[in-house]
Image 1 (tube, one colour):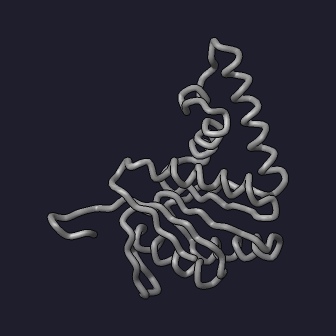
Image 2: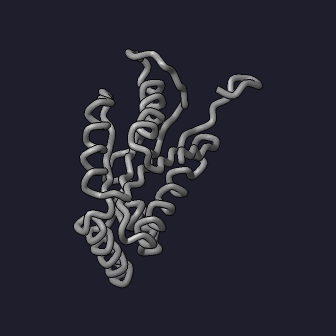
Length: 172
């Protein structure tokens, strides 16, 4: 399926998808989740996942704490997350401004040939715009169109989040 999670800007979509990604990885040992962070660096997505596993805040993950018990939780959560990566069950990708669809498709096709149960999560698809034009100048429109094409080409579950934008009474 192709699923789109939307809300107002800063509506905690990234946290919802991150939590969902962890549930998928923890509950499906034969599946692989690729989490693509479009609007944040890979390190931020990693820290968010560590914070969720450890049950602490992202701020706690990013700094050395005076409380050794918090540091131990963060260390254990980091090791657990690295274990998912090492066992080829989770990858966190970040996007570039160029967004080359053909390269992304080729990379995902390779992943799919190696792991039959592949789940794609794309976080940060702001301004969802779909087009059937080949050469799309707008980055958001290119990303949106590519996400649907990835779903059609690969026939894998795709989960996407993005902000709902309103212009007066119209939904953009």
